[in-house]
Length: 252
Image (cartoon, rainbow, N blue to C red; front, side, top):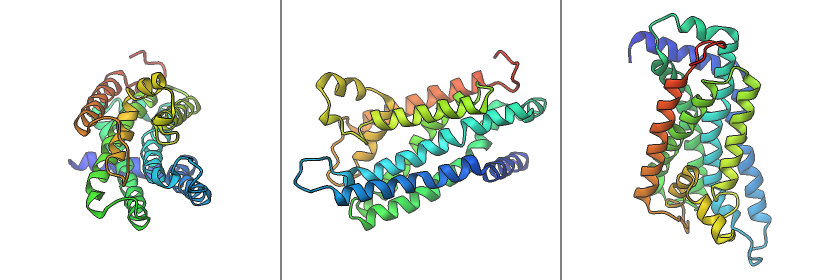
């Protein structure tokens, strides 16, 4: 990485940490939801036929960590930079759209790395993940970050209103969570609904995590899930770079 790219990455990292409205929510939200669902899992009668919340709680928390970093602290803050005119100034430099997005994402990758390390440590302590599966789960988390990051930059790269960008990002996050099979197992849904939702790229990402969880029940083979997530990532990133706007009045 060149010195100018490094300085730009550090600038984006400082911008991220100095915005508590986005940063602290994205940092602690997965752990708050983890505590809630752990409580539900321990309180749920084991013979009631209800879903095993303890089985799904770790992949759910990782899903929230990935999507919070890729959407909540990406789309809104990026739109804020456009509103303030910062992106317009950067657009007059040799930075370029792809380089801006790359350096902007570095701090998000580091944040998810730290969150994933803690969450996976808890998963091992709870006996829900074998120690040998941690590298694969960590790689899956980064792959998901790339996919949702592309979506986050596609949203933040086009919308001029920070509130609108944040709301759209949150909508994508919650919709993906509830329709991926992590909150409500797809096996409990009607066949037609299960088949349709199983074709969503977000469901393939969730499936990848389930392949590494004890007693997980993935729907798709690993190679297919990796292929779908990778292709979705490539399409989202290309669209995000090509449609990125430096200024509010820019049309393309």
